[in-house]
Image (cartoon, rainbow, N blue to C red; front, side, top):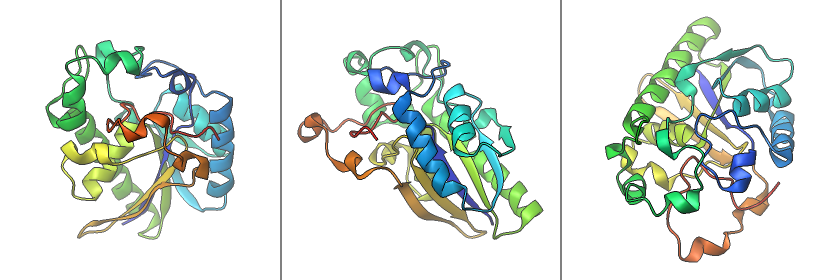
Length: 227
């Protein structure tokens, strides 16, 4: 089977301001554009058989900056989780919501108010990746590489599945803006080749709250370092 490179979009204006963007048409900020450019420097060296993207603006713009010559297919299966009434709100305010600890500890039980269940997001994202991987393998062979650009929680759910983890453990995974994670699917099992690779080392410096706060950033966050 083929190998998929999972690219998260670059940092957005919502990431920078601490908002949960959801499916709103937020754009990359200047840092996010630089991140996309650096991702492109690595990706353009690869013989990518296909490029698939979430239809949201921040993913499309990331791909257009990183791979300006690419023929990009959009797939709604890679769209951000539908956070419903949570969209557009500050994460620091959402952390006071009674649903927040459930999102952190038992995400498989969460359905966002007027939004999507996290289990539904996970299922449709995994099905989308496996469908494209099978298609690309059939058309280009098992050595093919292809790229999927999506969102933090979506990519975390795909990685968790490949690692054999229950969705309730996916908050243990970090996926920074413009990072690349790599999964090679085989008839027997997936191999997780890379996770959260390629970001600036400044993102490894823990934020000031890291010593007291064990919560994961819903939506994936902005990481700790500006690159």
